[in-house]
Length: 399
Ligand code: SAH
Image: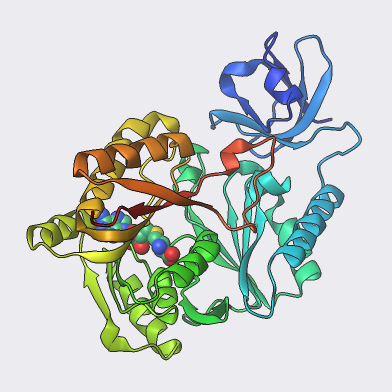
């Protein structure tokens, strides 16, 4: 018999709207002795069944919903059905001829809380973010191999959020051989080296795929500054799209090394690409002091605010780099500016960028809004799933 968690009166409201999290403050009591990752029944104060969830006594998100119907008992059948749906969606969304790397499973938004699965050619990389995902990991990996025919599955559960769940970080091969070094994937017909074992996240920022393509389409003939470049994703697309030159800045030497190799892999002219290992906050000031200017700038910083609580500090960081970028842009220049902070809404982000333009003394307008690629869908009952927002801002021309 699974344990039962009973909510305080009135606290069932968000669950009735199908929001998939139960916070610790909503709990009235726990009947039974569920362990981290165990399945529990969630009941309203009056005893009505609300959902099946995975329980974690160490997390502020005390339970994550697996299913909303009593007959959908969490287990292999439910996981398999959700996985099948997730894979079908990706088949429809991402043309496989041009792109061999994509997100197959996007956690809550695919009805699989805590599970991230990214495909790089025939290798899958899995992240388990929660105790519930840990509990089902091994069964889930068997299904993944069955349904995708993958040759290898590697785990990259070395993410900060696991600490909030009271879970240690964990990496290693789960099926097949471990990756022997960086592998080459295709994205929109371009080649990229991905270091699955040591790269950031699962190896590549797949969520920016569409936005990289947009940059390729918009920067012909422009001189570009790519801040927080990682392995040069935007830089490669920019040169492939005819940018005149690209300066890429990142604090990670390993990422920049991959970036240089990515230029070669696409036979792009190395002399048009410059790589700088430096703190972007310093670089932008130095470039400003030297009165350098660019026709396009990309700002794709790491998450400054994982939750709303850190939003204010994050806002200062975003304001700072956007203000400096506006000062470096020539009239008619384009700013591609991003935030992947869950704690900063699209509306707040636009306000911050507007404040930066004002303080920089430039007139500018939003010409396009960007978001995460469609293999990172957002379930409508889980707006938190929409984390990446971007603006293409054009600085007014002279006169
Ligand atoms: N635009 C990239 C992803 C950027 S992720 C792509 O499309 O692939 C953020 C990057 O910022 C990481 O590579 C990280 O190494 C780098 N970074 C974090 N803080 C930094 C800082 N203060 N200065 C320079 N780089 C930084």
